[in-house]
Image (cartoon, rainbow, N blue to C red):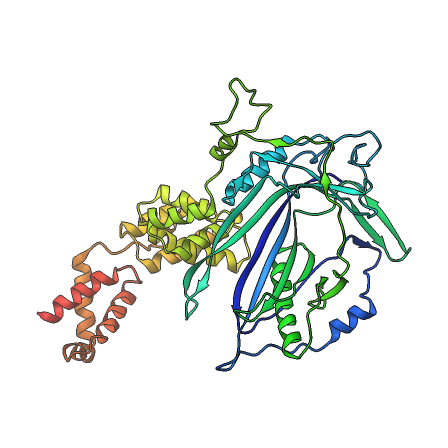
Length: 516
């Protein structure tokens, strides 16, 4: 109870759809001893054959989906939102419960400063307007894990409103272009967490844990479909999704289910649904016809939350007693969108490469550390990090932090390659050796395996001449205009040098010999 929670509301976002696919959810409370079975009504819906919506023929209407998300995110804090009780994952049940958490008479809420600062920081990161005055409300409903009979939230005037999040997806006809999309953020509000119901089906009883309810993330998805230009469709709400992957599956499945239902003459009910992760579909929980009256009212035990900025901060105000929005703004780290743009502008990387560097934990830091220690061009560094280095990690299912090759080792290798001390093929041999023989340097591997490029031009010229003399037909093909034939000569010379000669240099020598 009273664990710190941020609640984000995202209004409906639309997609024009021709066909779709897949789905998920968890119900309130976890099971002990056995998993609960769906009701007979849920089983009937689950086992009903699903007809995939086909790509529309010419002249037919497309479908458009509208999705709104209500996101509950745990704030990283040491204590709860309205009490001094500790927040600790997997603590024994009811071991972190204060008198206020248990709703004993006469106890009062005390707002956690850290949670307010986190809410402001989140609002700034999502381009929200931060309300300098926000209010707390009571949301009344009765459930065993809410002993007070109400939940403290911010319904009327939340701490942040009207934000946006810009993201990129693969688009274009060939799905090979990065396209920007924008999600609107309706509001961000601080909200008290409820307790947790633990259902023991074997003993037909429910136990209550008032430590806290949820993990780090929980999402409710509101989904509807309609034809473009027509009124919005009836929406359903899929409750308590607890991972990004399940959220995507639930939305995809629910969109497809509604399209199939409407195309076969059915109707969509305004209902709450859950997702069965084993069966891969949503099932009905309850309808919304008799909408619950939460009887919102102002929270009498909490005054308005007043924030300041640099222009409105009272003279001589104690920094420990007030929260300065501008001060929090100054502490914001570089946001991902800014980092991606900087990588493109500073290093000339492709946008898709900047996404990969940020999406893999630790990869951006690895890339930047290599950049600091090498003379190689950033694009070449990015190519090695994203292709060779990341390829080895994926192949062995390793995290960046577990790599046997350090940024310094890769930087040394790229310096050897940049100075033309070794060839590109030799560099790959060196990297493979660095990966399997931890502790060696690139220079040691090159010296032990004699992978240095030939620096004796006279010796290389003699090798080229002897190769031409030994393959007169290939030489004749080149002179007749077969431009590809010279590649065979280059390959033969490289083979003779054990790949220790620069292909470009070999080509120059061969072309001079062929012209003479």
